[in-house]
Image (cartoon, rainbow, N blue to C red; front, top):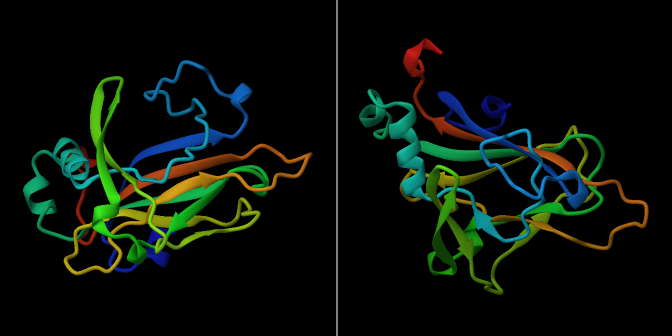
Length: 195
């Protein structure tokens, strides 16, 4: 799907995926981020999942003998997000046009989890920011958006995103969704270890 929808794709590396459920009773109170099958609640804070430091660290950790060559090409961190079971009636995913976000709007933060530390960005409100969402997004509709782009001069190197709650029908189905996090490299290469 990414090869058909995104230009300049050589190698796609899937490094994480998460399922989410909008009903708290469906999630465990003790979050274990190492268990990817454990549903998380929708994230209602506008953010970018990974900062440049985290992207470079992931590349160095995942491709230790090839990292220096990989870092010379175009690298993008891209998410694919879609509902799993039914149209989204609560907690739709909204994305912000990256061309409407000023660098000073972003606040870099550390994300400290069990066994890992990474960086991400949260955003300060600015009236110029333009947000969009797909109303009643269905399981056959996927959103593709990026968190990082190493290409110099790109107008929108990232897209903020957040779950938003609107008027919810009384009999609304819970949102069940999956997000797949990838790194897209402009060149084709074999992953280390032959896998």
